[in-house]
Length: 117
Length: 114
Image (cartoon, each protein chain N blue to C red):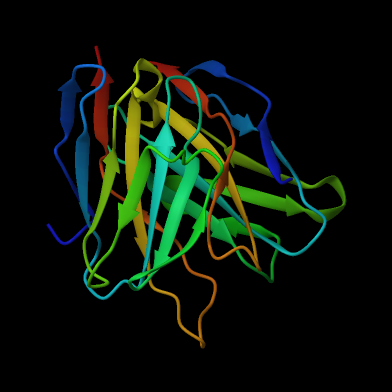
């Protein structure tokens, strides 16, 4: 499967623990996005990368959240000192944007479902 | 701030019925518009997209959507739904100068009765 892959698919953690999620985008896609989706809502933008540079962070991304894309390929999203309100589906998406084609679609992974107990 | 509103949270139809899901957005500039579908247990998949040109766009599985700029709308339609169309449908917008990030509506759950 050459789509966007996320690991793990499910994570249950105790409140106060740290968790880290991984996203592998489609090969050669230069943009990578993180979204969060709670029950009954659409995905909400968290942050995005152009290659290894993090270009935008949402206000939703508190200081307990950090994302990296060190080599411009895979990305990690870490949540420190998890809270019950962090329980959600965390989605990763990627796209290829070029000077010749600035308008492209994003391809989504299956997400990591986080449950904080 | 940009926002996307989907009018219906849950729609229930019988097979062969016609479908129209409403989507309105708020943004004054140039936008790209999308409909994504999420089948049970699966990831978000693109149904169709509008970037420019003909405001009536056709997507996969017989879906189409019409961009009406004056109404800030991008409604999704299908003339005859099937049981396999049961899924959640999300309308999304991105502005041309917003780095490709998507603003999603809250989603519409479609249930099609066989």
